[in-house]
Length: 407
Image (cartoon, rainbow, N blue to C red; front, side, top):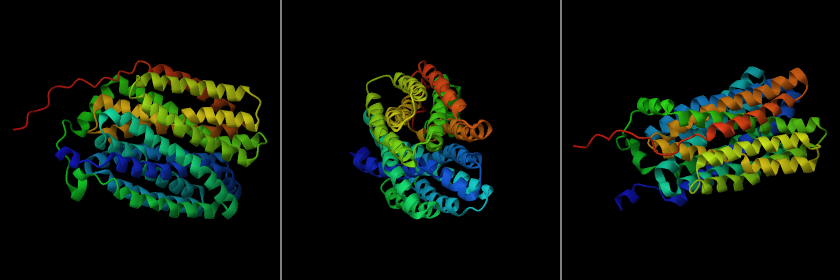
């Protein structure tokens, strides 16, 4: 009974965590809608915009490691509040930046830091600590599905805001809206961390946990697969609206396609999290990556039309963030939950290196060649690679020596 008293209720954790992820991820999934309005208004190249978003993803990955450490050590509440304030300031700065440098600092560094403190690594740490292991994979699937629902909900809203208010005012509206994370964060104040209390003693120090993880081949393979995930989804999310417009399709087709990706990923992430309780998560991950490669190849092979775009969005959406609960649940299963936010942050750093390259190469190669074809083909090849490297992952808990006996 005393153990139960030290835990938040599952409903409270999932409700507040899901709403935070819905808002934070929902806003960032729509950034591709701003590519053409901003570059045309500021007379910038697509590479300029893409580089700022690439910096955002890299900053998210780098700072996410330290955000995870802080959340594991001091609790997630303070990290969530700080991330929320940075998010609002970054969106406002994105709207008002007069130069490419200031745009990279606000849309890139500041929003990247904000996302590190308000998305999966921090929220999954709470889920890992507060929810029973028998339901952990499922709960992570619910949180990932919330991020997908945020995309389904927010991308059309962002499109309407841009068309109705203009791109600058739309960003300022979002800057105010993201402050809703603060009251939701109060629902995730963990009992062990309230009042600045230090949680119970850990079996490992931070350095020992890192050394153990980075020596373990399965963690390296999970990071390699996550790199591919970042490359694919951020390239598609940012550049597909412009790719479709280049092909003569209306901006509404891109908005609906991104919304469909979000809608179908609600089902995909939930199912992936649920299956992770019964099936080998390495096989789930391999199937997701191989399915992405097939979906992209079919999309490029088929004649382009609104119908083909929507079909691709539905299939890709089902596979979009389905890797997130499976990857994080595998890390928790192997290493335990004491350092889950930090280890999840390191895995996500690999994801964000992939994101950086995907979005930046998309803009760079488009400006050099006038086409996105090379990056599409890279996405196919990387999908096959990720499917293969996930198959040898060992999911069993890592063997450790006995913990020191308490006096």
